[in-house]
Length: 327
Image 1: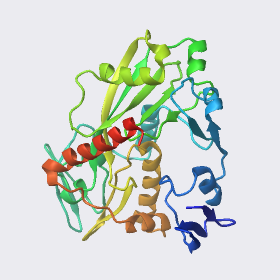
Image 2: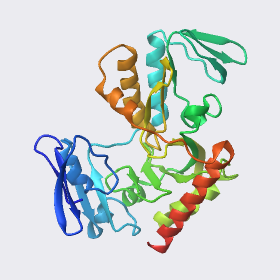
Image 3: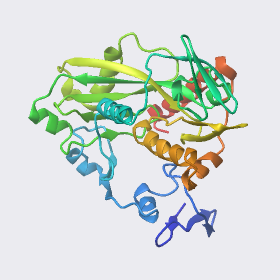
């Protein structure tokens, strides 16, 4: 891939095939697959925010670590407190008459023109249903469950850091993630704790001690935190799809049942996009975005219920080994 072409939108891509250069007209191009540099691609797609590459010599102006050989700064991104976001949105929904039932796992769904959703102590009837179980779909719907795999992701939080150390770690208070298979991601909290997450493993078993599991990963990036206390640790499952694109659409044969899942670690932003597209589709509005996502094919992970996670774990282990060997 040599270039993305277009004035106001992406119109074509320029490729080199052997010794020949040719252009292919296209309407869409998936980001993040190394086809063209993200900065150039963002400009071609009309991205409004500043994006700039950071050379190795300037990396410490962004991250106080010698681990990286370069980076990409995206000023259209940011970080927030996810739990406060969820609590605020729940309160807003309740103010509009929405009823929320926590700790009520669904045991069975009866499909039809009126859907019945069963729990251990009752059931709910609805004309329209949205399945948003993501990594926790399990056997509730085998068709969707086979297209998303749960992967464990874990976070630790340090004790509050003094201002000097906090600014040394992240001079511009940016949220950071790397591009490895089992990526690291981290940011500062409002009270100057370093929140450090990552791992993304597929065994289905949580580490017995998340802090002991994650601390060495943090010290590989920030060895200056060797004597810093870990105050909090937590984790959960994220939903991974084979092509890493969100899966949004209607359940085949059930026009009143919608689904959204497989955000592949980008749920804080992608769930909001999914919610908007689902609302448009359910409300009968023309939704080009929903129609576009619904057309994307998603494979079922091979290996069946028992083997698909171990097979993916084996594949991920291979790519981690390649990373360590530098290939």
